[in-house]
Length: 103
Image (cartoon, rainbow, N blue to C red):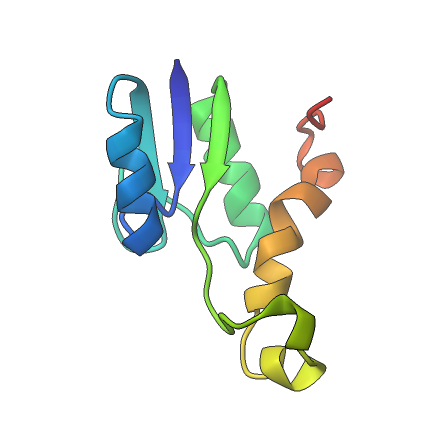
C-alpha cells in the first residue's frame, strides 16, 4: 500500500512509520522527508498532492501549538499558534484542492 505520512519524522510520526514499515511509505514534512509540505498553506498541500498524484492512504501526525486537554482548551490556547487550525486544514481544504473526500 502506498501511504503518505505527513509528519513522519516527528515524535509520534516515527512510531507510526515504524509500525507501517511493510508498506511503501512517503514521508512528508516541513523541513525534511521525501517531500516537503507546509501544512499551514493550502497551496503547499495542493502542490504536494499534485506531485504525488495518487496514494492509497494519507496519515497526518504533524502538528504544532497547544497540546493540552481539549475539554479545557480556550481561544487563548491557540492565539499564539495555528495548532488548532492546522489540525482541521487537510479535511477543510479538500474541496478547494480537488481531492475527493473519503466516504
